[in-house]
View 1 (cartoon, helix red, strand yellow):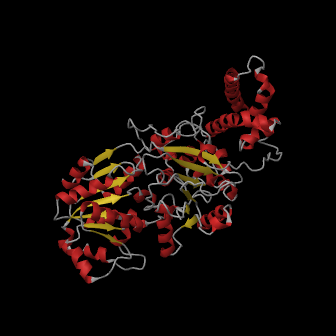
View 2 (cartoon, rainbow, N blue to C red):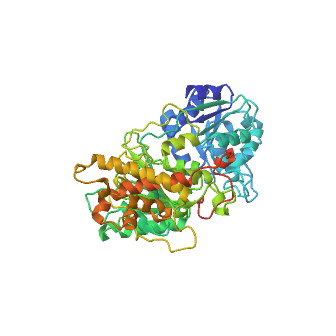
View 3 (tube, helix red, strand yellow):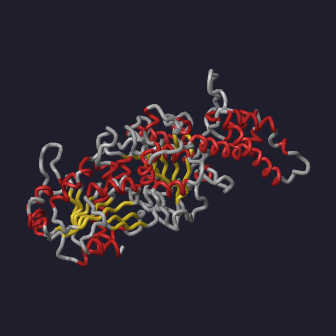
Length: 554
């Protein structure tokens, strides 16, 4: 914080890469406190975030601060104060710095033509700076979501040369960092301050949806059939790719409650098409520890700016389009560092089967490759995040929760331990006979046979009745061969194993889950093997046009 503050005071451009809650706000406050006759402009993405930041700077530091967006008053008295430098901290949405879509020049943009005012601006902080890349520029023919983010270089050109710029974000891998530096005109000697972005109190997991997103029964584990007061549901945010889906999912979960509890509308949808009054009331109830709203179904746009400390978990209902997007959403959970939280991504069936080694993939397979690769990861999710974000800090792989993630077979983790109700397994369906892909590829079978054989030996060794029962009592050679040959997409849950082997429910309850976890991780591992010579852009989730099945930025 001190190093970042000194860089801003000295006029040196800098980037601060740190996780939420690390104290990036203080990097902005210290220069304002030490140089009271100057102005700092902070670029802020959302009105809700602006509102919270105004309260922080006014109450914690006593710094005169105002949010400037489309709702800001046009009062001449207010703008005279801003022009005179009486309000020293301006929280500005980027759209207020350039001509809008209607051809009008906002009041803030007009002030930038006043040399006296411009000379008072000594520092610019770009909060959530990753938006320059993820929202501000066209990527492979995809139009920018908020083009004003990509035009911040024009704003810099209007300021004096000694004005320092500071980019702040928790999600700034090298390809995003380069884009930010180019957009803001950072010189080669600009400072980069990087601390670990690891969230040690979050458990990471991935789960395949049964029948895809359309089957909302995949969410039934959240509200068990036996639920009743004084039982307490966890506080969750569930991110959806479509606004209609947020409404449908909230209605579905509410329908699982008793008539009395349905009246409270514990589950609410939350997106930009709703009225300001509804959004304010819903957010207030969700943020209140004693509020009625416990489960918020949100789009990506609605979820930004959610700063609620007691969120127990985040669910991505469908694969997010970008790894950075996924990490940002999951960061809503566990803001209270002394409490375990979880981040679960529920992926569509096609994600597990996508072949990332295909040199001529279908259009849908050219998009979000890094996001798909993470979803297919059979190993440690925390390590995968650290690799993607180039986080080599000593704390990058630390965790304080009961389990790191679902990528460590044998660590005792089970998805059912995160929810009050049972995980939905659906009806077991064997794929119809086809002329191809009836079995697992031959070259993939031996590896699975080895894993199952090792598991069998370990399981039998731990069995109290091992002197009376041979290993074949648990799983014989023919069963292992059958499992190794079965098409990977057949295995959607633990019950699939028992179905393939025609075993009893009792056998499934004892061994099914362990065998399914081995097969699931093996399937992900074989599906995610990369070809030799992948370029850096192959690991960038922004390559390719948007995929309809992937999560949109609603």
